[in-house]
Image 1 (spheres, rainbow, N blue to C red):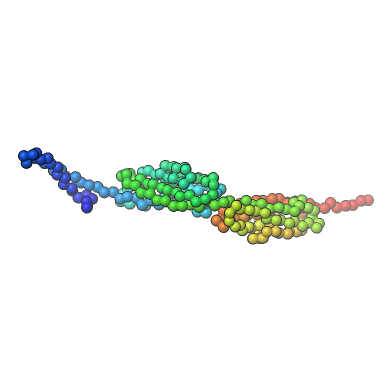
Image 2: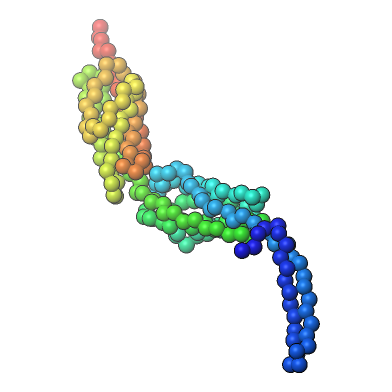
Length: 212
């Protein structure tokens, strides 16, 4: 083994057929540098199809070395040569093997690979039986018709008065005051991917009838 910082003697020589020869000896000092310990992570961790994924280099550098070069392979045929890859998006859901190679200022290399799962996005949809009604005898029916290609969904309704209702497919509401009210439905998948939709309802005051 060669100890860093210690001298190494190297001798080279030649010899002829009659036994005569010559040799030379030189001293070298060998420097051994630390290799990086490659690693990375990403945000958001859920990895939804609509997300702009931010890949961040978290490689451990020691022994006075500093990062010098990066090579990313995102598993979908695209690459980058930057320290942190921001706003990376995918076209198709699935599993992608991410590969990072890092190189230090001394030319030492290390690599790290990890699989990211890109999940389907849900689509929030709801129907209203009649979005414009009179104040007397108003009856609004909100029906969740959201869907997702793969996985399961939960929902949260946000009504104008601040009331939140969770995991209810159909809501029936009546109102005691005329006006315009915003109804919002948010759906969330089992991977944490979500979508929201808002619609306005209108409640009109009846006219006052009089005659003389």
